[in-house]
Length: 63
Image 1: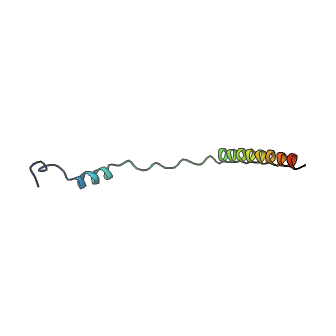
Image 2 (image 1 turned 90 degrees about the vertical axis):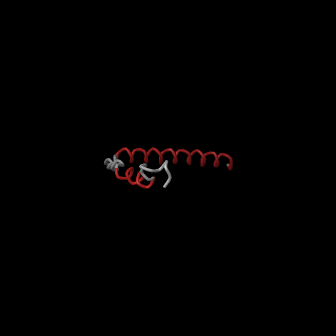
Image 3 (image 1 turned 180 degrees about the vertical axis):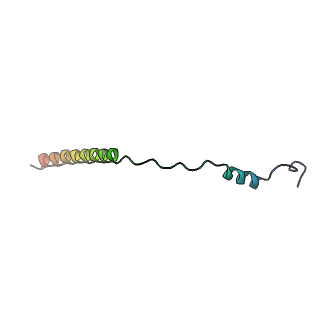
């Protein structure tokens, strides 16, 4: 030990203390399945619209 470390807590002790005083993990809130389902329907609808546009443009270019 050097004179500068006498009386100072070791780094390991500080890390252990930080772990002991860490906040408890938050509980996950209940999932809002209605909002999730709505978002999924919107995403599917958007993908279907894009597919329809691509299909229509392909039909026009081939015919």
